[in-house]
Length: 243
Image (tube, rainbow, N blue to C red; front, side, top):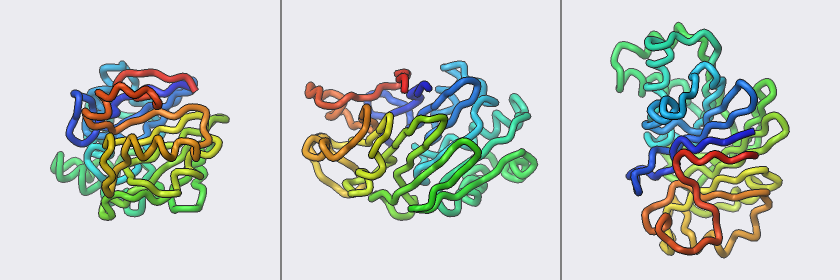
């Protein structure tokens, strides 16, 4: 299985990085973990066939994490009409959030999404969501409450990928990462400790709590990107990781 980093930037595009989105690929099928506003551009840059993406999993309702869905859908409706089913998974209310965002960004197109072979599923904390050969688990994250933030874990084809979403410290990160093949953890700050995001120094103190084969940092501000400390792997747009 391969993970392609479509975007690992924060909401402000520090270091010119694209919004959060990770492409998991095994064989001829792919899953998107988050779909920030710049995702379609990055998918085209990587020459990814949108038909190969069967599932989009959203961690929370902020534009740099799910704002790319309207672009994905208009391409799938008008540019290259989609023939395969698409599943979108997210927190409570995901269907309405996507519908409302679609209509806000491309007025008149939301109703057409109802004609697509498009299915929505809501995950719930502590309840595995089984979709064919995929199992999605979610834990509450400590971030902007209106965005309904979650940490998410995808188990697929014998591999486990854990993603913190946006969050400040929560003990939920420990079971999230436990036994994972890959743990993607946000790290917006260097030394600062603030609600909503994690700090590098904070993670250094906690790193022994994470039972994972490999851990990579994402959603970094410039000060984290530019830090010379190499205790953690740092993601970059375009990076490909074998899992």
